[in-house]
Length: 264
Image (tube, rainbow, N blue to C red; front, side):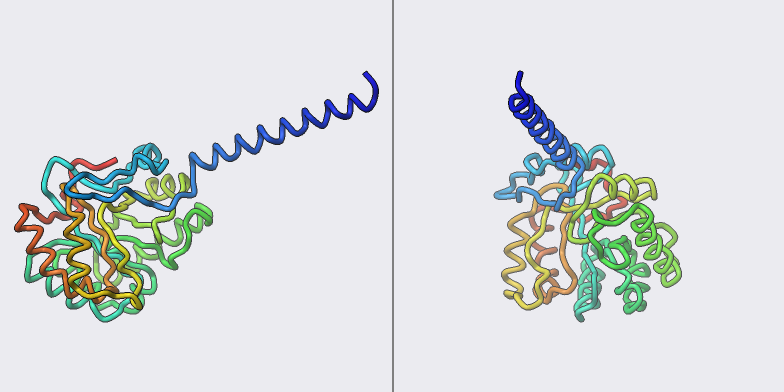
């Protein structure tokens, strides 16, 4: 074999190895993330699904949940509180009047600026969950940094409210990877995603309480973990009607602490 042939064969082998390595790394990355949580929405009572998203087994492995028992007409109300926009007090008023428990996932900014609302949440029987201190993309930070983010929220919430436990985590923007799931699980957290949501977080694109009411009630399903943002005027104004309609359909509102069967 002449020198030119040897070089050609060597080049082909090198190229094949590079392609194989790229494929292997890609496969590894796709299996461990990062992922941006998404789901197939409930339509006409059909259960939502994450089967097509590529991360179901990963969530199952690390004990994460996105909905409860799909055989029971139970709903779990959750709110993300990154900052205050003037509506949380009204939301709490409605929850109190309707006797509905909720979980509020808070950031460091919220903890620092809304101590009275935090105290009211726990005093009225709601759960405060962890939404991280600085709202980072948790798939890009180290295990040590993630631990610091979560511990700081937990410590400050305890200092403000006296709530001793913090068991539930919602990662910012629903972004996660296997490391974030594993680290948070080791710290004692259940990662809580959602099976009912709509685009409610844009304060410059609120479309009225009727829109919120229709978007939420159209997705009601047994075991739903409802994600709402407290910064939404539409949510605050529609919440009472949403609760009434859900109960009219035979649903019962439960605390995350009451969730017995969890999916995936």
